[in-house]
Image 1 (cartoon, rainbow, N blue to C red):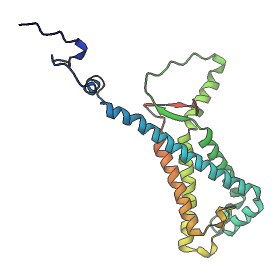
Image 2: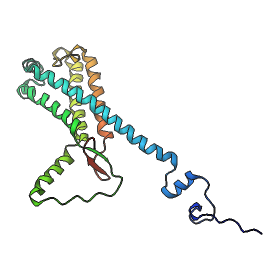
Image 3: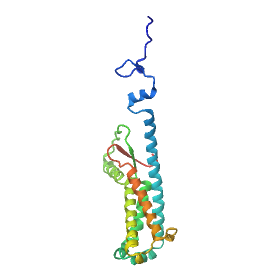
Image 4: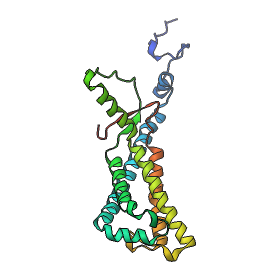
Length: 225
């Protein structure tokens, strides 16, 4: 009887003498993930990143637009705040605090640190000179706090407050509801404005949920790197 041809060791399934003829089966044995599942992982990551980028871009446009509208006519904005029973006691503070807060949130969404999943061992940082240790520690701490995810959370919180403000007055005291908006937004009805704010609240929540938190298993990075 002729001798059977030798089968290369790399084509044998672990613990058996049966050759593997399906390449996808080989990938399952070596990685635990078949070929189809491997295609889904990067696609999901790209979709999440695209969603957060679009949400962040729209929120940045909104906050810059509304902040500039308020700052360009502070006297009118202050008068509007004085007309609202809820904001009247704090009008002097809110006329500056609101537009500044909107600009800060826009800046955080634009330049805040992003995070991504940790796919490998952490690199050992280069030793820093002793006189720069404190400064370096402060920069690292600030980078961990001022993330783009924090910007999404702040945006969702502020938009939720605006939405509750409009919803409350639409329900209980529509006659005393002032409008402090400018440009295109000022032409909306209050019902349209309510759903407009609700939409941007949803964008902020979606961004906060989809943006990695930067906790265990993630690492921070600058945008564009």
